[in-house]
Image (cartoon, rainbow over all chains, first blue to last red; front, side, top):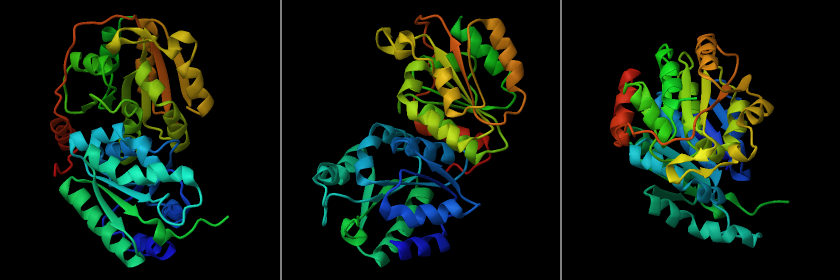
Length: 167
Length: 190
């Protein structure tokens, strides 16, 4: 995840200068790189749906925002997603997957299994990335469709790409 | 205190502030005081009002943002008080219209009617000002205070009468309100 994150921050052509996150190990490089950038507003959240509401506010005020979370957090977001879906506001979620590949913690499995279906049920478009190169291209495409086309898009980053959690 | 009179006072003194409303009666109160392009009304997304306000405040640091919501809506955004305090915008004010009940759903008593003090919680989180107001005279004083720039987020709890007033319904078309709000700020509408 380090290389795709570095590449994406360096080539932030979508003009995203606003980020909210509940940390995940898979997002740690992006959180650090974005958090260190004085041009980027970064919010740490107590729960993931806060990021959805903040991103909508940022858009209302003219900024492009990205929300980072792990798949377990998608479950927390469902009702709040009615705001960008109903208002047709751009939304870009980057979701690191748990519970689907070399997962040691079975408690991650149910929400991992439900992530894509839950997002699609509320009206969010889901894209998946399984390799580093794929991830950069997919996120760039998702950002374009979100911010230039008023779409609500989640990119699910496969756990196979992230690798087994190290303890 | 009378919620409509209190909200009308706050909006008469808004001085260009952008306003976000929480679903239910706060949206009706703000609409009753005059429907303008600088208002963003929520009809759902319960728990989102103060956070939508935070996003606007961060994107528009030169403008003041006033969130007007209810006790039930803010209770659902309990963690948001921590998130906003940590983000520390100096242009965000949260007004909680606190009737100590869930007014839209049959007037069941809420947590604030059972002893939870939202102003004390905001203060503990680190809001630079947070207090309860109990009469319209205090709201007049607050209107004057709010015209002074803040040094961080502020939260005020207005203890209002528990009553269901005639509804004053804002448009339910969320895209229309979004587009009108962004156009008001001179932003492209898509």
